[in-house]
Image 1 (cartoon, helix red, strand yellow):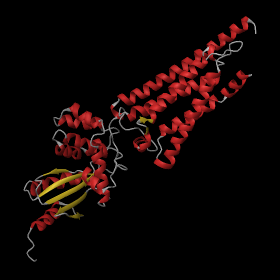
Image 2 (cartoon, one colour; image 1 turned 30 degrees about the vertical axis):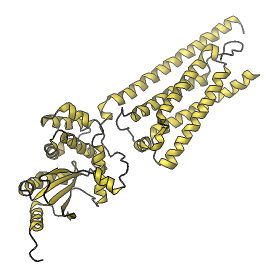
Image 3 (cartoon, one colour; image 1 turned 120 degrees about the vertical axis):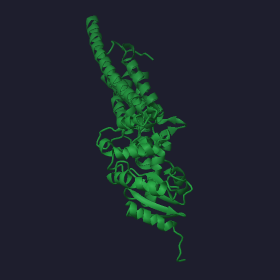
Image 4 (tube, helix red, strand yellow; image 1 turned 180 degrees about the vertical axis):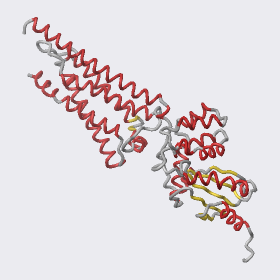
Length: 246
Length: 154
């Protein structure tokens, strides 16, 4: 091979290497951009579906992990338990039409306490899990029930959004919560474990839809199918009335 | 390391391919690693179940995340291919042997991980599958190194 041919080959090889470096540069820019975006963006951090929780098949562990939110006198002997989904229209109906009366007549009077367990139907309601976490993030700042009620009141708005994260943060702000702290909680996996455990507890208890209303007294749970206020009040008054016939 | 024979050959196309593929593999592995370190929050999975795979006991070997091993492996292959593309190293037997053995080890390791996903964990993470495909392609791209090993021996 002559010297000029060698020079030409080297020059051709140099051209190939230049093209290679351009391709590598493009791959590097795309790679850095994609990884950087995922690591840096908030959307990557907000857990919006159940997570893997070890040991939920152990009933003791499940009962330990699953935690409802309680309103009213914790010593009340009767518990009104709801397994609910913030994106469920029937739950909205219960929350806006029945629960206020229940609170006035049964909770504030000390006759019963109300316990809300998350049971987001993730197959049908894309924001339900995130909403459950959002309410608990508000609970970290002692405003669970205010946020809970706000979510149900405004359900038709956020349920139809593509991404409800911003709206959830806006609600926190409107309630006077520390927005930064709330956003940081929402954009993490905080409370994902307890919401997942609540879902599993519901499954174990036979919950198949929402709202499922259970009235419990003395460790005996009863599934209430007619959860209108009059039926609930009558049922609980009956439970609290000493059994004269015995 | 440099055993140059005769005139300087042009940059081997297969090594160019290895460098591009290993850089792509590097970013897939670094994404999984970042997830493992809790930097990305939940992994975005259209299909499969990365959370199951990533939270399984097989996601770490001796305390080291499998994704970190992947980052190291792809980095090594990338650097080797780039060195092997420089004129003095284009006919290097050492580079040829390292590329071939490195990618063969990678494809075997990846095959084992894919087996774990299929048979033991019974969940698929598409990023792990993507990595398995990339390392397989890298291995195929290093096969011409066999010719280079044989040629330099004669």
